[in-house]
Structure formats: C-alpha cells, structure tokens
Length: 545
Ligand code: HEM
Image (tube, rainbow, N blue to C red):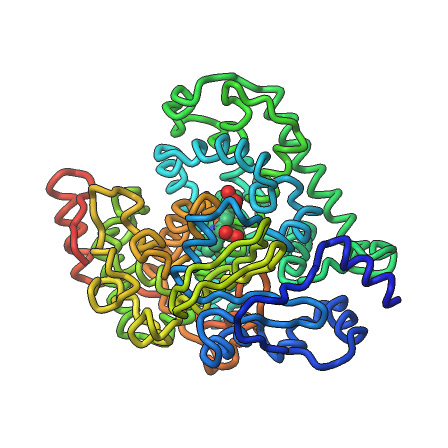
C-alpha cells in the first residue's frame, strides 16, 4: 500500500521543497497511512483541526508573512504578503502554473480556463473575455432581476408562514439559475425545484479542489467509493446536457465579427448567452470538447462563489442592524418601491456595493490561491527583509484570507465595516481607492487588487484574474438590493450556530438560518420616487446615498 501510494505521489511530482529559508511548521504528527486515510475520506479538516485557512492564519500571526507548512509527505510555502502575491500573480507570472489545483480540477473542467495549461489558456482567454462586454453585462441586469423573482416569492411565503429559511441554500439556487441562463441559456429552475445531479457534481468539484491529494485517481477509486460511482453518473448527465446545448447552438450558428456581436440587440435576442457569442464569433473553430470545458468551468466558478458572498454579507448585516437600515434606506432612495435595478443604479448603490465587497474581504472565495513554481525563483522580500528562494516544483499557497485580515494592512481587520473603503487614507491597503470614479467606469465601482496594490485580492490578480468579477458583483448587488428592499432578515439563532467550513468557497456549517419579515420602503423613498416619476414620467436617479 505504502509503495503504491508513493508511486502515485511521484507521478504527481510532489518533490519536497527543502532549502527554502523560512520557518518550517509541521501540522500532522500521525502515521503516513492515517494521513492518507483521512485525506482519502475527505477529512482534511481533521488534520488541520478546523478549516485549513484558520490554521494558516494562526501560523501567519506566529511565523510572519511567509512560512513553510509540512503536511504529511508534502510541504507548501504559505504566503500572506502583498508584494509577494503581486510577484506570483503578476510580475513573474510566467514562472508559475496552477500546480496541484490543475490536476485536481482537470477531470471535471478539462482544459477550461481555471486549470488550463498556458497554451490553451491563452487562446481561450482571448476568446472568452470579449463575451463579457459592456452591453452584455447591461443586458444581464434584467436576467438577474428575473431570476430573483422566484427567490423573493419563496422568502415572502416563509415570512407569511413564520418559517425559518436557509438563505445560503436560496442563494445557491438563484446563482445557479443565473449562471445557467447567462452562460448557456439553460434554465436549471433550481430555485423552484431540486436539481440534484448538478448540485452533486458541483459539490464534488468543490470537495476535490479542497483536497490536496487526488484520491479519485487512486486505482479502482471509481469502483470503490460509492460517491465516486454516483459522481461518474452525474458527470455523464451534466455532460450530455452541455453537449446537447452546444450542438443546438452550432446548428443555429450565425458567424459574425466581434464588433458585430458586441452590437447585437440583446434586448430582443432570444439567446443572449455566452455560448451563443462563442459559437458565432468569427475565426473561432473551437472543438465541442473545449466549449464543454469552458462552460463547465464557468458554471462551477460562478455558482457557489457568488452565493457565498451573498451569504456572508447577509450574515454580517444581520448582526449590524443600524448599518442594514442605512443600506435599505439607500436602496429605497435609489430604486423606489418597485423599480428594477438598471446598470446606472449601481453607482449610487454605494453602501450596498461596499457591503458585498467587505464580505469578500472577510470571506475571500477561495480563501487560498494555489501555484507551483515551474522553475527556480526568488520571492521579493516583502515584509520579511530577505528574498525567499523557491526551488523548482515548490507548491505555494497565497492566503487571501490572511492578506485580507492582516493587521499590517487594515484597521480593525476582523471587524465588518463596509465604510472602511470610503476612508481611503486610513488603511494602507486601500489608499488607491477613492470611491467611485466615473472616469474608470464600471471597473471603478468596486475596490480591487489594483487600487490596493495586491493587498485586496477578491478576484485574484494579473493575467489569471477572474473573468466573471464584474458579472458576479453586479449579480450580487441586484440580488441583495431586491431582497433587502422587500424584507427584514434576522438570524434564527446565535451567530455562532452558523459555523464555517472550508470548500473551494467558505460555507456555513449549518446553513444560514434566518427569519424574514416583509417591509415597506421608507416613506421618504416612496415620496422621492413619486416625485421623480412626476417630473419626467420615468425614473430619475438620485446620487449620494
Ligand atoms: C478565476 C473569484 C465569480 C469565472 C477566479 C479567481 C478568483 C475568483 C479568486 C482567480 C483564481 C486563481 O488565480 O487561482 C471569484 C469570486 C466570484 C467569482 C469571488 C464571485 C463573487 C465568477 C463568475 C465566473 C467566474 C461569475 C464566470 C461567469 C472565472 C474563471 C476564472 C476565474 C473562468 C479563471 C480565469 C483564468 O484563469 O483566466 N475567480 N469568481 N468567476 N473565475 Fe471567478
């Protein structure tokens, strides 16, 4: 058994990274066999004694912004420093790939953007990015609102019946419905019913991306582990759905230049999806397999991440009623009692936006970014004073969790305070963000890694930065605004009962159990909306908040 597993280890290139002049921390003392058993059963958290990123945080406070973590047979360099993060993600990005993450995700995402090798990545990134053009994002605002109708209905029923709700589950459903329609014009309808196959595939994908040893690749794993058998069946089902959507789209292909595609009237288009765009784009002769990988990757990347931001935002707002009241007043003032959010509403919904961004600071998804050195490299000194030598093959974790909670970078880092982003000069990490700047347009609406010089990495940075960042933030802003306009939500139990577990995203342990009460928009907002309607017969935007 031992020898067999060692071979597996060698195959994946898990050579040690001895020689790095950094503090070395052992975290697992049991036998190698127990270690593998625990990993194989997915109980990595047992090894760390809780969510892994919390262990990484404990050592960060003890050993500083870079240290080496030995984990059974493997070790990782853990980085919690903005200068080093910038080096890894941007300045010397060519020296790194996704390492262990790529081998974990490849069976599910194939050559999709997240695990893709550099050659494939370059071609596909260039094809996909134009799909997220401004007019498309604009059109998506309507989709976000439509998909939220079912959610609002359900929360309304629960409010009327005095039932508690798991809001995390609701956010997962609505974000799945949204991503299905946006990416390939498919209605999962999951807010109204269960779609177990998709959920199980997505769960498994997540589970895998948080396990460091690809246990499903062990010989006979597919036969041995019941969950793996189910997973194979689920994958076939989901692949069939995607293949069918792709062939349908190919059958109705209308080739056009990118400029033409970007100026298509998406308000009347029957299918405004990304798939349609990718298939119609001139010069794109991608295989169906590649398209399937692209769609699957975006489905997984864009689903639980957005749900998690909403979950943790609501969790924190529920504990800050005074702040929540101000967010609701802003929503009332901008949207009035009934109007659906449009693109131009995003700028004045400032506190609403920042409430989400602050949740991304405290609960970054994923909480660690994973890289592997393709050749020997040296990390810049950053906060440590000396450069760090990284031998070829070193596995690196960038802890965004630690960066986002670093006392060196943030005032009162553990506190949920969206308004910290409005005081640009009080936090070294956010000196570059001076509030919404219309000159920067959409990109200026939400603080990011550029404004913070890599101290704040909600969507990563450099060339592998998230392609769905604006989409996700707009989606979350619409969802939160529509929900808080109609309902007051409070935690059904003490905050500690919610719990926290690691996946690729940070989940609650026990669901986000809440009680909802219907609310009326404030009288002032109703009056303002009525006045605006009287002035021009149409809505009118008020700035400020
Ligand atoms: C990459 C976060 C939503 C598609 C990433 C990365 C992060 C991230 C941190 C960089 C990973 C790394 O460097 O290792 C998030 C968060 C989201 C979100 C927090 C929601 C709030 C979305 C959505 C989509 C998407 C909605 C698609 C519609 C992708 C893709 C990549 C990526 C394709 C890989 C990009 C590349 O390697 O070129 N995301 N994401 N994400 N994300 Fe997102």
